[in-house]
Amino acid sequence: MRKKIVAGNWKMNKTLEEGLTLASEVVNMVKDEVNNQAEVVLCTPAVSLHAVSKLVEGSKVKTGAQNCYDKESGAYTGEISVSMIRSVGASHVILGHSERREYFGESNTMLADKVNLTLKAGLTPIFCCGETLKQREAGIHIAFVNSQLTESLFHLSAEEFQKVVIAYEPIWAIGTGVTASTAQAQEMHAEIRKHIASKYGQAVADTISILYGGSCKPDNAKELFACKDVDGGLIGGASLKSRDFVDIIKSF
Ligand code: PEP
Image (tube, rainbow, N blue to C red):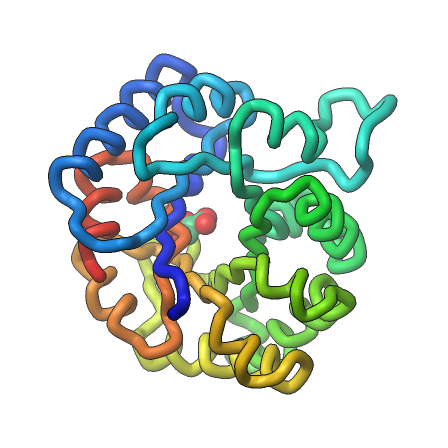
């Protein structure tokens, strides 16, 4: 059975103190209220990752980074390596978020290197893909998303690929309050799974968790998570409020 996952992407929000408060609220609410088996991951700013990882120790909640550098170590001022992420107790790394692709020029090739390093470090990549509104309107959204997967992931062996989590995030839905309809989300998730099956076979494709991201909130999570090929969510804005985030986790 595929893993159900809800990951919060805090982006550049929350000071250390605010982050610790939010994380401890999430840990307590998950303990008291969540009966399902969903994996919960908090992807915090890098400076808070150690402290939040310590705080969640022994709970059902895991932590992740929002990015890593595409080199193992060295003279790369300001960057953070996969071994550093691992050393502070995190288990996941978001890779290829559309904001990183847009503002920091991350290419599919660079992301392939980051995926390799992440897996080598024993971390789980949450690999983001998704199209612009213009690409969707031009009818090239499926081909575009497939090319993101092909170019950054399809060099992996089947065994490696099964350690990757995919997050489909239509760029036009991120932080805009506009959510993909369940039909749009299901269509793309099924296409992604079909594309994976064309390379690795249906049995492998059926084990891959594909998360939806883009204005997912407590009031739409249930219907999105009910879609056959949607295995959870990557949550931005709504992960900054413990009540909203935990209500989303309870939506399976
Ligand atoms: C995101 O940026 O990963 C995201 C899904 O953001 P939001 O939920 O705010 O649209």
